[in-house]
Length: 608
Ligand code: SER
Image (cartoon, rainbow, N blue to C red):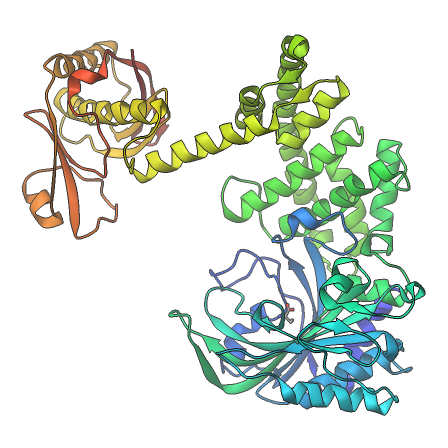
């Protein structure tokens, strides 16, 4: 069976069951701000699941392209993907559990359709909890289906041991409750279908969890009975309309149809993997190359579809996900020894393979190729610089035979080198990496930036924390000085403090002159020399504003705020912490003054 035949069979089957066939929506949801990507076929249908009338009626089916990145780290095993296609059928207040399960069983096992072996089919159902009861109805319906082909099917017990007779497994919400896709919306109990992909291993006799973990069971289809709406207060209300939402994984179903045991051995990936072999000169059969090739093929396929639907690489939201996929692929390509830009060459294969089904790939070819080339060139530059740097570090570290955690962290923060990459390269040079120290360093920086950005030192922090508190006080002095020198129009637009320096963004149209800069420095240093106490008082926001304390516009404050007062110099609403008096700060020096964005300047300064 081919992928084209499988898509067609599914749609034909549900056409026979009086479903209208609807097109795939884009991978970027059109009217749903609650999710970044279309992760299931039900997404674009949410308004109709909630009761709105669909123009095509109450029975729908389609093939939906989906992007799901929660499992990004699993990609490389036999079944996880960031891009996949989902075959789906829906009942909008029409049929419910009986028809949905009967049709799933018929489509999977009937000779006219997939003709899979019902003896290798196992299912899960919802076990019940405080929100909804155990799904006895689905258990009974499944038993009826198996009985039709002479199989006596019972529900597994608490131990979840599965065997030939016990092939219906009740599981909790984590496994057998689907949705909502975002924070709120339609959801409900579900029943999932698994196929035994390795019958040659003998009789099934293990816990359900083990059978899935060992890849013996491949999940292929999920029927969701969407009868609840999850509300913002996390409670569930019964919806007026009882819906069915099903999703059958196209790639995984082709695996079982072709007798394979993993998605990468199917036609969905083989042409892409052949191209990667050609570009790298390596073989997919070679154990070391297998996982990198799987990652490259999955990630670049997802990237191709995302760009076609309008995403471009950036540092936020969808653009960031795209950027991460491309960069991971480039790095894996490097591990495979591919020289030069290759991502767009892989995309060309993806486009060729999929453009008949998804014509937008053909239409957007130019955009896809350009975006990939641009992103790859940009990333390779940092990657090259980072590789040079790591060679220097290795040379310096040779006598110690190890790269310190601090240096590994530097490579990570400055060149975007994940620890695995540093380790990989170090290993090639017979040098180890101090991983524990790297993780300590990582935690320290995380901690520092988190506490600083939340403005919440709880006292007792190490040296770095004390320095940050002093820089924080210096930031208040700086803002006050800027208002004195440049004028009252100056307000804070952003602030960031590391253990070494402060950074303040503020509203001002023009570049500061050298005279203005030294005047500001002087004012701050005079305030430091006067050793003014830094007083802190808690009061209502209203009172703080009336007292003339500065606050950051748009910031959300609680009812009570803290006001830090450096007498006759600065008064600001702020979470703290601060130095206790300005004399502790030492010498203040501006190291940089530059544009940040239109109408906003940025100053970096240190304390000596
Ligand atoms: N929404 C369900 C899923 O994604 C069924 O389509 O599994």
